[in-house]
Length: 267
Image 1 (spheres, rainbow, N blue to C red):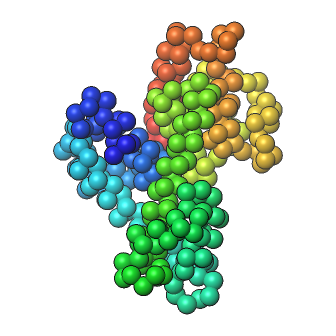
Image 2: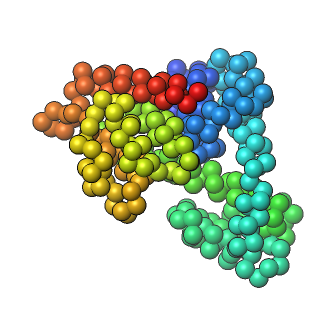
Image 3: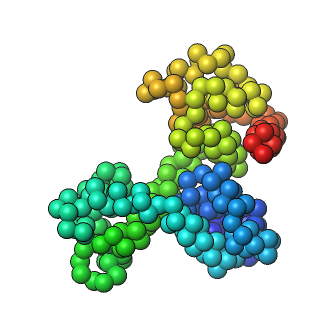
């Protein structure tokens, strides 16, 4: 409920339908706004839920989340089977505590890198109570883990962007710009794509050569964290490094225009 309450600006137990994609992203039910919006646009159930509810309460939000899970499940089974087989080290058709612990460590999930936490996770997903996880149970387990991973990633991005001086609204706009330019869904942007974002926002760092400073892995691409750094450095600030009120308002307006421009060019 914590994520829902953060979007419930009036404390009335509802959120605006237009804020639902952002909320879904924050809760970890999908990887980016572009993916969420495409599913809403292409799925009759999701579209109708949002059309019928200008204000969405928690129960309706859970219906939306469940429908997204159903859509995602239909495209993930083969990938999950490969992951399951990879961690079923003894090839007995089940995954034990030790094998799940290895999965947690490989995913970098601090919360579940302890054997006691893994035991708790198994208890939640072990529907037949035999102490190990078969493939059907693994799908539930992986869904739980993936959503946690997405939530942790969103929170890390929020804290990082806050340190750079962006507020939550600006972060959402930058996420959307990033996702729409990331047409390959690779979670990174090429230098030309970053340059395009800068152009749309009316900023420049002096060409693609300047972006080399942010490309710490020397791959010619920037992840979202590096993208935020670029945006921070490209936006004019006062002598203390802060945006002036007028500059902040101007930035918000340019972000909104950039999002609309990219949407229009995609459609």
